[in-house]
Image (cartoon, rainbow, N blue to C red; front, side):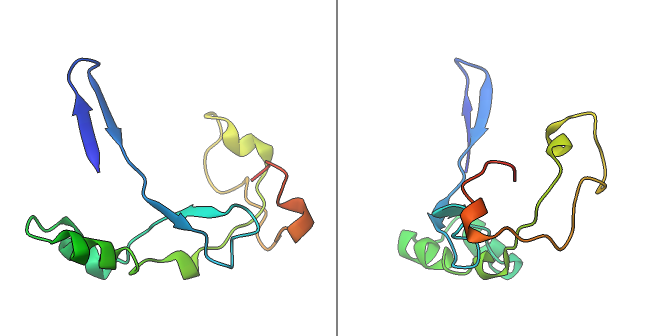
Length: 101
């Protein structure tokens, strides 16, 4: 959902969230809703009813989300590519409280 504020000359968006899927809930209790591509047209259709749109929120990719450890340099705008990814490293539940993902 996009909105333009003419007074501030700012375009902003809203990220819809839901309770986290069990496979990532150790990182955070919420997650973004990422709709499945096959429901995009239904979601953005101008005639979609509120109840139908709400039902589409359940058609998401939450169960497919995964996470992995990354190098802190990933936060730098000077770093590009996938070199910062340390594939295959999954955090233990007690490590999820740290903010290095």
